[in-house]
Amino acid sequence: MTAMTLHARGLIHRWRNRLPVTDATPEISLGEGNTPLVELRGPVEARELGIRVFAKYDGTNPTGSFKDRGMTMAVSKALEAGATAIACASTGNTSASAAAYASRAGVECIIILPAGYVAAGKIAQTILMGAKIIQIDGNFDDALRLVRLLCDESPVALVNSVNPYRIEGQKTIAFEVCDELGGAPEYHAMPVGNAGNITAHWKGYTELFADHTISSRPKMIGFQAAGSAPIVLGYPVEKPETIATAIRIGNPASWQQALAARDQSFGVIQAVTDDEILEAYKFLAKEGLFCEPASAASFAGAWRMIKEGTIEPGSRIVCTLTGHGLKDPTTAGKLASLPDAIPATLEAISRAAGV
Ligand code: F0G
Image (tube, rainbow, N blue to C red; front, top):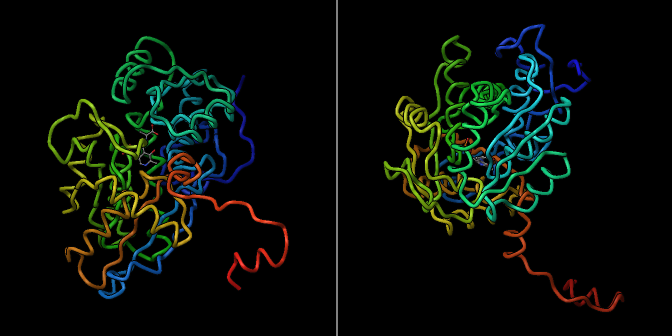
């Protein structure tokens, strides 16, 4: 089937002059990008120091994660090159996004998942959007190694973040932040898994800096889950573990690029514990922002740095909330309990409501 461009105004449309697209590139879009930048009310430790904390709520993308930024580019370019099938390994969000954009483009989608470690919402999305799912007895690192081999030996286009077009699309998050703040923040925090997104954030800021659109670049502050923190430890983790399954990765593909982003920006990559992640997850929910556990790692790390006093007073910190809370209803359900039903009378509900 020849590619056609159906109406949807997404990030290729908005940032066309900053992306490697031409008139020959079909625009496979679901209206991704342009996500809310929301200033938080707290935490109190930040307020006291005049530090402003913002959430870049990328869970509001069409499939509920930042992956759509990269996928609109990767699938559009794959189609331009004549691909009829795409494939990826995934902890769940890349697969949901790949399945959606493949459906949109009318191409086949093959997904390799680590069995038992993908959140329920992500699996449901990926199945219903028509992808072919292959589950393996292995982790994400195994899945990525295998899908790379599969794509090397077949005409199937690989759409993991080792595909440079993924990074191109994802860099637009920096464009949006600078556009809205009228310049770069002092810090940008994000979770780090396979390390494509920290690479993309830094590329976006660096491009704006190079053409003098911004006069400074933020420090990249990246956070891995403590049980899956190879970059922090300095060696691959064979059996990564964390409640934040999205970033349960022991040998990130963009490891070197993450180190470069960290060092060039004078930033840090640190580990946050599952307890810190869950505390941040609950805090963000009370700010009205429901994200998935991995996403809360960005704020968890930033919050700890604020408490430690390593963030200068007056700074602005943007935390990327990479995925929507509804992606992982199981974790949410474990933290939230529903009260028993009561009689359907005004008296009973008044008593229950305490008013
Ligand atoms: N946050 C979420 C919600 C993710 O799904 C991922 C990665 C990350 C953060 C980390 O981003 O890999 O660029 O460092 N998820 C991938 C996936 C691995 O398959 O969905 P990264």
